[in-house]
Image (tube, rainbow, N blue to C red; front, side):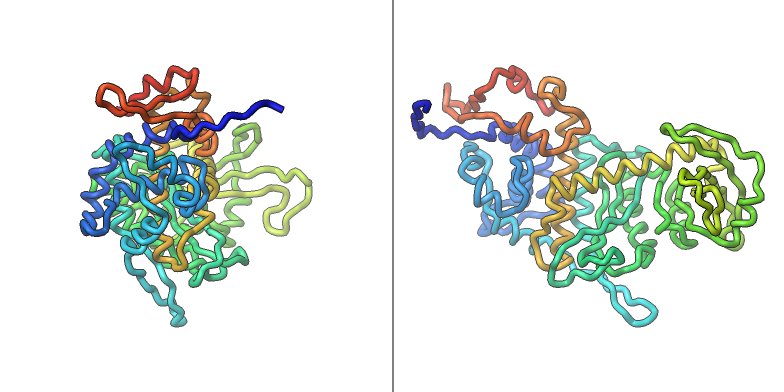
Length: 425
């Protein structure tokens, strides 16, 4: 057996977290405090320090807020100037920042709760502008989708997927989250979706961010939602739901052309349809022959999918390929669930968990900012690397703070010279 010697020096296994803490304080500290306001001096910690402490949980491989006090505090507190707060302080701040729910009543008198978290969603956009990830007066492509989070909380409702939870609505630009709004899990996906979209578009436009193209699933295919998308976007692309009145017209179509997209053969076509009175849109249709050879009662030997759009310029292939890129946004939800705490909601009420969702979305966006600023190759990382990989490759390195020439110096024990050249500016 090898001989073991015990050393009592203050060495941390998370040496890579300290440059990240400094970058967060430099880029987001002021914008967080100016947007959320300053807490009472007796409270002890500013909101920027609280958000930074929450960030450290996930950047050090934690899965829930309690990890900061239970496991990480002895290491994070070694920073000579930047303070880290306890999990209790983070949980109290979530309650402080929570805004009231909006109650919408369905025709039958059943109420549904929504929480727009307006102030924190405003911070989400301000932070993206501050880091330069979004640019004022820029035009972007937006994806809007619904997510269902399974959780047993005091006010969670049974979703159509047969589990209890919440159904947040999420807006994404590129791979950045620009809006999150929580709602009851049993609310229909179309119920007051127009109001959610209006709030998201209003926040974007107030900061000089404009939408060129938007993509949505069939849960957004209704007259009022399409009208809202058309009002705020140059082009929209929405998965059209099945409509029996169009079947005969689709089956009678001629002039299908074959295209190979992502290794699969499709037949594409498009027609003009008056889906709602006085409104004519383009319906792009793609069909694929059934692999099993069985005949469907309505669709026969093909599977049909349709995209409703006001884009009359692009080819059918360009529209289908652009819409298919929407599937890649599901990766963001998977990463939020598994890497940023969305599967471990900390509070018992929907409004407070809405606050947590937006706070962690801000941390996720900052993570993407870091990936754009560090030499990925030197650390064995990629632009698509998940937070767990980032923890193993970048954060997990032995380090120790020392005093030299009246300055605080971070000694990192590694053969990788790239740590000495880190510059997030």
